[in-house]
Image (cartoon, rainbow, N blue to C red):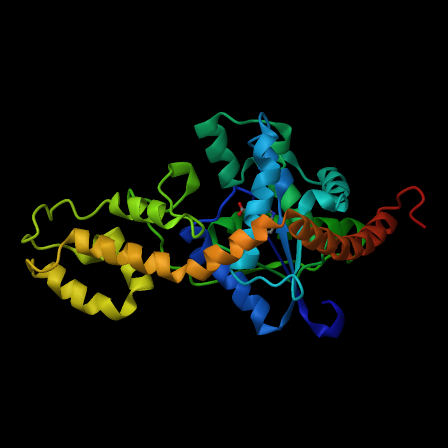
Length: 334
Ligand code: TRP
């Protein structure tokens, strides 16, 4: 635990560019809530080295994506005065710890991580750095001696690995790191336009920062109930992605819509649902869009925010590395 007895949290996101509704409802909203609870000392990291484990051939967009994601974070309510917001590659200590950890981690521990097996099979990826992805993630977390990591369920195997590595490290070199817990939050399923999970890689996403006409177009392209072809046909809202989103963004309307849809009322069809959803999204994120545009118009200020964040992060990371170097009897560790 850090000063004031507050628990330390760390989480990270890859700089994939503009964030979408799935990122927001699944993670960012919770990050803002944790910040506002005032209960934690928090580090939020933009993990640009992780982005290179897959997109190494053409890194030309990386810098722009970092600006975009930083603007999204702040526009969504993260306050750089309350949390430490920084870019991973600004804190070289992560790389040093990753290297030292790589000495003690058996390769099979990394090979059995589900996301590794899956991606090697589907994308044919097999670089040294990619195998080490969850090890770098472990370094990100434990270098702040984090007590907990707010993540989605998909990250549980990575966290379990981090805990195993901590136990192994502490066994060899003494009690240096706490075992980080996952801090899971309830997140609704956010379907994309094709009714699969919303994801950039499926190109089925809507970004909060999208201009209104793009939001409209995307919403109009949503998959809806295949059995509801004509307006008078009865629909099945419980399996409809547009309805799933209306439950979040137009909660007062959903009861009425559900009964109209299920009864096959001629007064209400899929187009009306989509129009309502588009309207609600455009309105809900109007101030968000304005804020992110202002932020992106002043790159110097964003740079300054991230530089200040990196400075704070570095102080704690270096403090940990001093302990690690001593524990591992490194040359000149003092
Ligand atoms: N693997 C995480 C993801 O895909 C990103 C990440 C990297 C991360 N380092 C982290 C998450 C440290 C939490 C803590 O979302």
